[in-house]
Image (cartoon, rainbow, N blue to C red; front, side, top):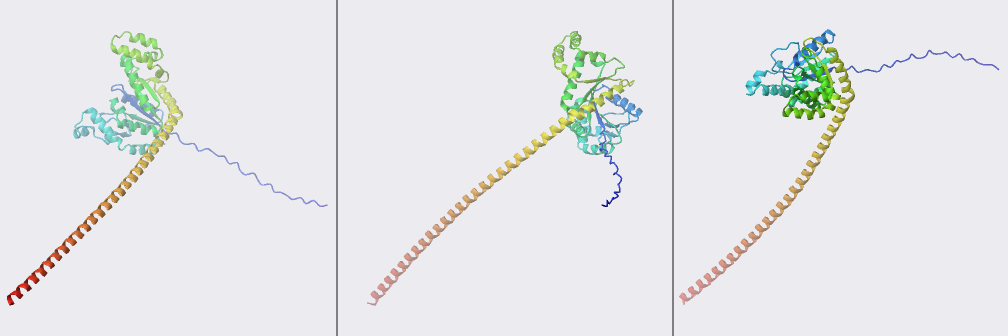
Length: 371
């Protein structure tokens, strides 16, 4: 019994394919700086711009203040290169605030071009810094400010930074006014929010943190004031207690640069909130908005179709009525023609009989004369 041994050539195993998951590059963080006039927004951007350059991560800087005379930092996009603030004021006969609003409105009409420029530079920069006009209400409550903020928030991780003047906020009433403005901005834009207590080189921001964390301490500070506004602040402090618990506050000095590291730690935390909270809610809101628009479009089309059907039926009824009236008019005309014809026949018969009588009378007369 022969056993045939078949030599099987062992083929080498295929090389292991290492599948590397394609990791999308992180989008740059857009930092939108807001604040009251004189709170130090421009010097704040100058300081964090210098800090990022020292960290070898230069930002992409955008200036949206058309009325500023000089900028203490270099910027990549300047609204003054596109809009002439004084010319707008002169051409439209506007005051300072009206000219700023109009300039922002004109700039917002071409904001898609700015987004395309940011898209080209998003791989080169980690942060986009946006400086806003000194009059905070001009940007916050205008249509152009809403358009710009929502466009940035829908495209990039966007964080709203509210700069507070710490020395001025040492008064409890002024502090409450700043907090109310901060909470109004937060609920308007619904973006991650950071409060920067600026000018800590003049006065430390410890008192503000204590007022936010200890309700009774703020009450004792406000009792020293005696006015109607203090009673209102005392009531509002209870309302804002929940707002304080989730608020990011950072002490900062634009003069010395203290607080830069703490600020960017807060930015990283706010970016994480944007990715896991805001972006999810925004996508849900976007889906609801698209669904509402689709339902409204279908409803309008249905109403238009019903209107067209109704109009066609009305046109048909009018056509039927017109045909009936036209037929009635033709019938009336035929009847009139028949009556005219009958009258003409009667007249002809009468004329014939008259002519016959005339002939007979003439014949009779001739006979009589002959006789």
